[in-house]
Length: 436
Ligand SMILES: Cc1cc2nc3c(=O)[nH]c(=O)nc-3n(C[C@H](O)[C@H](O)[C@H](O)COP(=O)(O)OP(=O)(O)OC[C@H]3O[C@@H](n4cnc5c(N)ncnc54)[C@H](O)[C@@H]3O)c2cc1C
Ligand SMILES: NC(=O)c1ccc[n+]([C@@H]2O[C@H](COP(=O)([O-])OP(=O)(O)OC[C@H]3O[C@@H](n4cnc5c(N)ncnc54)[C@H](OP(=O)(O)O)[C@@H]3O)[C@@H](O)[C@H]2O)c1
Image 1 (cartoon, rainbow, N blue to C red):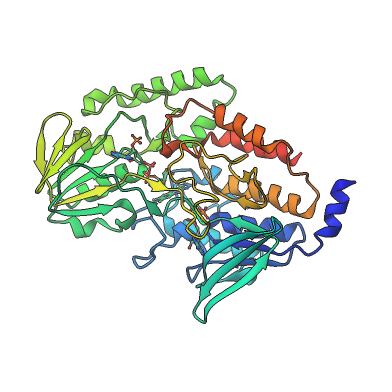
Image 2 (image 1 turned 60 degrees about the vertical axis):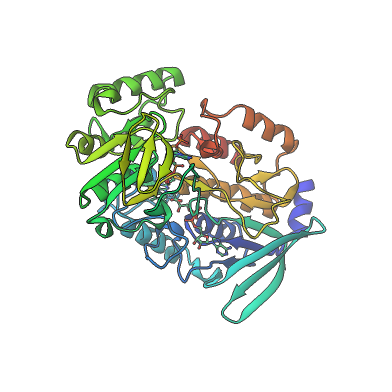
């Protein structure tokens, strides 16, 4: 009864989506599928694809010349829209962008998108509408919407740590790293143990006379293929096992395939392989054993061109590349309303619904051990149905959010890096349950 009433009230809801990356596209497709046509999508770039638009002038994208996805083609597609048969297991960024373009074309999504238009401010009025200020080449404009869907991505605003002392060489963040060739004559230190750090260290080592990687802790480094299967496909084969057994099994399998981390002069991880965001790289360990990448522990301080490490050693470098991750940022929303930048757990139900704002949804704001966009697709299905009134918004949201924060899928290390971390399969099931 209540639901039917909502459909009447919301016959032509005006929906604003911020961003036409993989998550924004999923949002438009599902809004359209549910019969919502009054959709405005603001995209500050001149094309769709978000992070997957490789262009050295694109200040949003964090991918580089040689990026290939780490979630496999088999598990990296929107619901019912597989990647083409001829794609390899881990397609390049160029093919991934083509996949998004074909999705947008197939479902006719571009007609809703205002390109070269940046959202500057979004403010809630009367808890019923969002007042949105945006800028295009004609100037600054404003409009009101019944719903705001935020899909602005969470891998674009660099987290840059500070250390005592001063480094006289060049300092970059992985967000700025685009290609290795510029480091041909440079001694480079890459900082971090995530996928950006390991990818970049390997790429730079192909041309640089000296490449080191500084990791402040031990990481589980998964090879891209386990017994001939893509890593995420291999993990998916073990879903029937209890979590503790899967963790033990993967620790053992990785050790059998690669040996102990100390053989590579790396620290041993202090947690199970699923309790930390996975680093998936088949080349780093090989490069370390060939002397092409030198492992170093954490940094203590800088001194001129010297970097001092926790081992007491110090080395000179020309460039330090901080592959130290990204902040969660919504520069167009007042920080007093929403600020997740320093949190270790994000107060959203299913990483999308805020207890205080009924007409605000986040799409793709999750960090799966797997691919983001299928999950953004399910989140969008839920939102589209809630907006149309064919699905009830969950009640007692605050309580549910607290439960979700207190019971993560695994005992993830409590730091900002894991604020959005989810197990792909468990999260997918939770979203599907909401759609029942
Ligand atoms: C090197 C690298 C490799 C990766 N590999 C994988 C992988 O293998 N698998 C995986 O699932 N994920 C991977 N990711 C994560 C990546 O972030 C996601 O794949 C995906 O791009 C997220 O989509 P999104 O739409 O949420 O965000 P984005 O792709 O960041 O898109 C956000 C869009 O919003 C627009 N926007 C932002 N702010 C505004 C504004 N104020 N006004 C208007 N428009 C705005 C941007 O221009 C952009 O187009 C990788 C990330 C990096 C950096
Ligand atoms: N090929 C690919 O498909 C590919 C490539 C790159 C990135 N990605 C994806 O993009 C996302 C971002 O990855 P990312 O590697 O850029 O970031 P990330 O996963 O957040 O990793 C950041 C790394 O920097 C370290 N770090 C953070 N602060 C530090 C500090 N103060 N001092 C020293 N080290 C510090 C972290 O260490 P702690 O663990 O100790 O915090 C971690 O090792 C992830 O989803 C990733 O999977 C995919």
